Every structure is written in structure tokens, then in C-alpha cells.
Image (cartoon, rainbow, N blue to C red; front, side):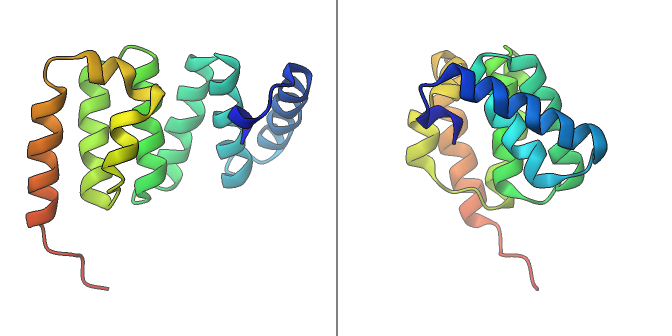
Length: 134
């Protein structure tokens, strides 16, 4: 959402607004998600990481939430943990490999010599896992 806007004032307003919502309701999923996105768009990666960690605590089985946490970890230079969390997102069902290969938030991982092997092995292992019974 925030990445599509060019208006920094609008982004700052949204951060202020969503910080207020989360201040009153710390477990508000939608506000935390918007806040994490806005922090990242603003370059406030540590704050984005905090919001993504909270979201992952609240929604630990949501592959997109876990994927976004991996992105924040990558942006903050926590490469080994980013790999671990990205693998978890893939095992939970995140399968947009094209996006993984292009997402600018994962640039630090793509520069790491382990990336290609990691992605191939994780993709193969995820495909071999049986879907969870509902």
C-alpha cells in the first residue's frame, strides 16, 4: 500500500494514525500490518521489524505474515534468521517463488551465496511435504 504512494506527508500521517490505533489496541492485526508496511516504506526498518514480529506472534501460521517477517529480518541485516523464517513461510504455504526472487526487501538474501541453494532445497522440501489435514 505505502510503496505505491509518493507523498511522504501522507505516509507520515498514516504512521501517526496507525501508531495511535496500535497504542489503544496492541493486537489490532490490520493496523499492525499497515504500520509495518508504512515503517518499511519510510525506511524505518527496525520499527517495521518490531511490528512484523508482533504480527507473527499473533498469526504464527499465516504464511504471508511470516514471509513479511523474513523480509524485515533481511532489511535489518539479520540474514541467518531471515533464512530460517523464510523457510518457515514456504513450509506454511508461501509459494510465490517469482516474488521471492524479485522482492527488493530480500536483496540482502539474494546477495548471499547460499540463496540459490537455499531456495532450491526449500522449494523441493516444501513440495514433498503433505498438505495439512483440515
